[in-house]
Length: 127
Length: 111
Image (cartoon, rainbow over all chains, first blue to last red; front, side):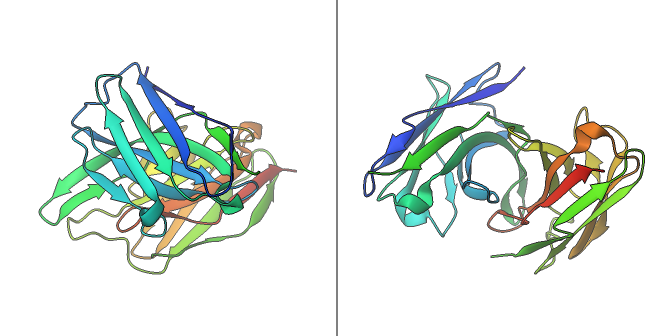
């Protein structure tokens, strides 16, 4: 059974870089059928997609965060990671990683909805 | 970005009764490949979201058949035929035809 587990510091100082890792178990991150993504949820609020990566390193980012986000993959460790720079209190949230099926169409790649989620990790931005 | 608008914001339902949630998108979710990339999720208290419905009307593996999705273009509906206590939580719709965006959520509670 596929499982995803987020890890990383729970507290980050303003202006610093948030770094999280998602470890995939029970399956290979190198599967050709999926992208792998990050989603966040501020306290008491809704969900925001951050970005997604394919095992080859191809990425898609939310334009609203693109200037501050880097998502990378390490297939040897079956992990993918998120870095979010210049954080502020507005970046305080539960961060989830997830598996995302995709389709290749003649019009390009369409990434589908998240079908397997990690439990989430809370990150607080505070001095 | 495509804006997803859900109604109602909250719903209080008697067990065994039906429930319906609406989701409207600011643009059509029909892709040129013929598929409509609209999804429904349920986030139970203290848990991550779980996929219920993909591409408008397909139940994800293990999802009870009391959940059904319908709609087209910009108007979509999630229906629960007979609400059970385990169905409480916040329901979200989501689109992936462009930059992935979620609706604001509909909180379902039991009377």
